[in-house]
Length: 321
Image (cartoon, rainbow, N blue to C red; front, side):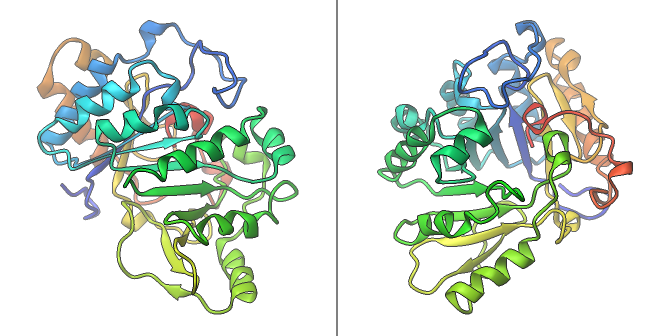
């Protein structure tokens, strides 16, 4: 389906956990307030919303969080969504800490692709960024997933003064592996407000100064706005998601569902529509109506370039960014 700006909306990111009562090393960030379990949608309720989303034209679902693999039943939810008529693809974004132990289950569930958030290969920097000593677990998870024929992407956010010079090591993951390493510009939401965004244009220039001219990839490699490049001699690819210095709102094809049942048309704004009451009352028609209303309320674009206009106050982990 299309919105009022003519954009095809066929993709929904689904956060199955965010503000939770699971205070453990896997829940990053560690200072998120917890919510009573009844405030969080059940897996059956999430699947029900996905079923109604498919009925109005949503074809692709991304399971995210928070860290989705800490939610009991995450694999079962993937099974449920894969069985929905009209859903063509179910993917997962994870911090990778639990990936190794769930790799076979994810494969058996039919997961179509996995994104792993990883900002550095330096153990001390990893601890500084994530507040947990789990880099070896993440790398083990990546290696375990390579045993299965499932597309794998590494998502990295560079921060000035922290890991801005770690891109050569991160790119090295794609040297002999059939995976993509993608650099995402820091968005000024929540924790991100405290860091200046590193331009992907400048990063691309540095990479080309090091490796020579890169080959632009014209064939689609995902569902979103990433621009991909190939380094001669590399097995994998390099991608750039440039929300700040390469505003791509005209091609935005997604809405977001939080774990508390809120549909968000755009990350930049606090604006949302709650589906919780409709889904818990069993009104499929109302869920569809609210989904369509949220799509109709998608703005023409974000305002990250002017932080005074940003109204979203939550952390990215709370809104399924």
